[in-house]
Length: 281
Image 1: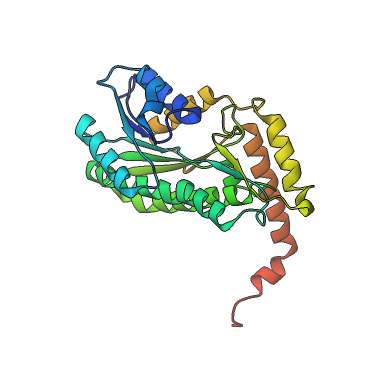
Image 2: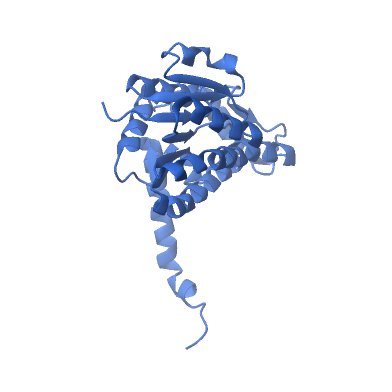
């Protein structure tokens, strides 16, 4: 077994968060498992002894709770080695269909919540001169897809935050990785993790509307194995030079390669216009 580490995992009560907590414990590590309600973490409590498992309530949109959860983690285990920003949820619908309130709510959790927890944990990691921030992004953070525009935009934000943090924290010995899962067989497509826009506009029936129907049919048929994703994160956390980006799943990889190929073709076609924008001489 590698050196024992303390993992701080948000959204650990179910789905990918639960699988990551289970894998970390099985590998001999300690975990701080968080969810909005501690009673939702009973299944995590059953995975390990109290000296290796700390359960704490954390609504990531509450910055004071984030700071308190980080304080309790350090008080219990003395350090935080790996932060997994996993808490979040999806919003399915065309961009125009999404109301201001729906958009703001998903940003509060997926972006501002991630920032709250990251700011709460980083002082500990900087003081240690070691640590690893793992931000759960999405394949939707690498390329846009009809119906996932607002949700994907929150993950595009996570990508930019992660890339910049990696530069800023490198002198402190702290690594940052954005993980971009494709469709993994969790409860993400259930009503507990995915909200659909209240408004439906007929003109989007062939784009966002078709995606709504596909998502319902695809539920519990996703190709990705959550247990294998958790094992991938363990490997990344042990790497001496971990990647800044880790797309997981053949679906994510194919979509990204399609996007970059199309992007390169556009650059080639428009190169003269692109390069002819500087002052002459």
